[in-house]
Structure formats: C-alpha cells, structure tokens
Image: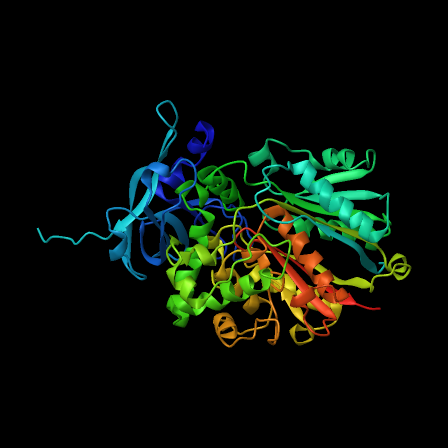
Length: 135
Length: 385
C-alpha cells in the first residue's frame, strides 16, 4: 500500500471511524458516503466502539505476498456491536481457542511491513475481550 | 434485438503451459474456434482476462491478440471482471451481435498464472476483493471462502466430510475430459485426507492455479443454420452484482448477485430452474458450488450441500454440474473460465461431450462469478436445431 493510500485510511485504521446516515440512522463501516439502506448521502463521521463478536474465522497457512512472515495467522469476520461487519486478523489468541460468537475487541497492531525500507502499516486487529478486574 | 448463436468453439488444454505464452494460448483457442465456425474474419474481438498485467506484465490485450491472430485493424478490447472476466467478455460479444452492431464476433478468455510462485499469485487473486478493507488485512481468496464455509457449516449443521461430493463429482467428470488439468480419481476417503489450506477449506475444495484459453464465435442465428453443427442459441445473457466485500453484504451466505443474475436470465429465456438440463457453475471452492445451487434456485437456502449428498449433481442426477470437470478438475485459469464453461455447455448441447454426455441435453446454463460473488454472469444456451 502506498504512503498516500495509508494516510487516506488513517481514521478507519486507527479509530474504526465510519459514518452515520442522518436520514435513516444507519451506522456504516467501512465508510461509503452513500447509505446502503436508504441511498441518502451519509458523510457524518461516527466512531465505533470496537467491540463485537466473531461471525466466522479461519487460519491462513498460504499467505499472500507481504504477509509471509506472519503465517499462520487467524482472520475473522467480526460483527460489531453496532451492526456492521469487519474483516480483520485476530491477535493475542491461539487458533484452537477461537469460536463463532466469541466476544472480541479492537486493538491497534502492525498489519504488514514492506521490508527494511518500506512502509509499516498499522491498523485494527481484534483480540478476545479481556476479563475486567474489580479495582 | 437479434437472436444470437454460438457458431464455433475452441479451447486449449488447461494446465501448466511453461512452453506457451499468453498470446500463444489465446491464438490456439481462437484458431480452433474459427475453424469450428468456418470463419476467417470477424468484426470484433473481446478478450476476457483478469491478471495479465500483474502476472505477465502485459496489458492492452485487445489489440495485441487481434494483431497476433492475424486480425489487425478490427475492433478489439479487453474486458475485466475478476474471475468473471470470461463470461463478461461473452456478454459484450452478445450485446454487439444482438444489437446489430457486429455480425461475427470472437471472444477469447485467456489466463497465464504459472510463471510466478504461490504468494505472488495469491496476492494477485486477492485483487478481486476489496483492497482497502479485505486484502489489506492479509485475507487470501481461499480464506474468504473458508470464512463462508465455516459459517455455513455452523448455521446449517453440516460436517466437513459432507462437502466431499463436489470434489468427487468434478474429478469423476474431469477423468473423461482430455482438456482437463487433472485426471485424478477423488474418493470421500482421499477428500478426508487432503491437506488443509485455510480451515475448513482443504486442497480438494479448491480449484488450481493454471494456464488456459477458450474461445467462442458469435453470429446472428441465420449464420448458424448454414453450418453442419446443431444450432445453439444464446437464450439469455445477464449480469448481477453485489457488494465487493463479504462484510458489506446483507447476508454473507446468500449470493445476491448470483440470484439476481440467474433471475434475470430465467426471465429473458422465459423458463426456470426445472427446465435446465445441466449447470456449469462456478465451483472455484466447494462452498461456492453449494451457494450457487441455492442462489440459482436448484436448492433452498442451506440445502445446496444436501443436494450434492443426495447424488443429484452427477451426470444422471436432477441437475448435473461440472460436467467436464468444472473449475475443480478442468481447472480455473481465472479470466478464461467463463468461456470454458460456455464451450462445455455447447459441447453438451451439440452431443459432443463423449463419455460425459448428459442424455438429451437441450438447455444448459453457465454461471461465472467474479470475486467472492460481486459480479455474476449467467448465460442460458438452447439447442434449436
């Protein structure tokens, strides 16, 4: 991914920022500027909580170029608690422990790196929701 | 609108063609189709291809292949719709002939994938997905299908081994197709032992990386009546689309683009699933075959795998699929696949399918899918004489 392309996606990658449709109230991620439900313009930013659950998951043993160092890794479709679905890697969890319906939360991690000289891309991954300690 | 016929078909063997480049593959298929049709000239050439730029460093295929085939000067362009490029090119040819803008149109689907090794090809194929929100997360195409397959098993209660009939059927049919990449018998036992690629998708759920080219010649139906072949007309040609990314779809387990595409095709042809004698569907992965059967109305939601388990997808079942091996055994040279499917339906309707002949086949359907279901092109072909 290019420097400019990475910069354009910074609000999505680092904050999970999508949009809300002012007409019908739909919450949208990834942002698309036209509401998929009512087709009205939807450009008002909305930041998602980052919490959701695993809709489906798999482990990648044969990665595309740029991800060889990380393989095997687990990717998932995560249903956000606000409704939209996100495609992302899971982290801080063994593949055998993942199951459909598992609660997860967004964290910021290194996604890919283009060698010594290239861009390191950071963005969202999801991990199992940490148990809160009473304090 | 004029009635359009397919008057010529041609194909190369699918495989690892280290001795043939992109242009040579296209030429071989085109020459075979033109010979079959008895034509030496054409008004236009449409080239279906997905990855020539990425995997051979060559774009601009329309003019290149027209010139290389001795057709310098004619209208020629490349059509791209990911793995649906081949059938999309056929549809462009159909529009040109049906609309009276051209009389003889050549369509060739061609793909050269084996000059590079795994990760480069995997990354190239992932370009059919959403670059900003799918591919950038390290999701391969196999992984996208694995996400769908796991959820399907979860929602409808299937076991991994229930998907075996798709690979068993495709490979049984591929055995008798001299142009198929694989001549390899697959049993439920060998399916169970196949290495995992992206759990639960194993090697025998997945179509291979390969090279190949297939071509058709389209003309007004009157032209077809002057030839020796049985006349095969295009009864329907339709495209349906859906969100590019799986996460953007209303229900990931419903291929809405495929349902729209099939519905439009049925409307155009004035018939329904019951009248279809065979269905060349897009079995790039076993789960895609199941979802396609459901979207096109051959099985209810969640029952596509049940249809296969009941033996209804074999040559003698209710709806034969992958009759010449499908994407799984014939092979999936991505931008060529849609044209291979149409060539094979024509073989069936002409009665030229050899040991794989579906008895009394009169109406066949071919459905080619771009990406994980975002572009779906359906053609219904009918033997009329």
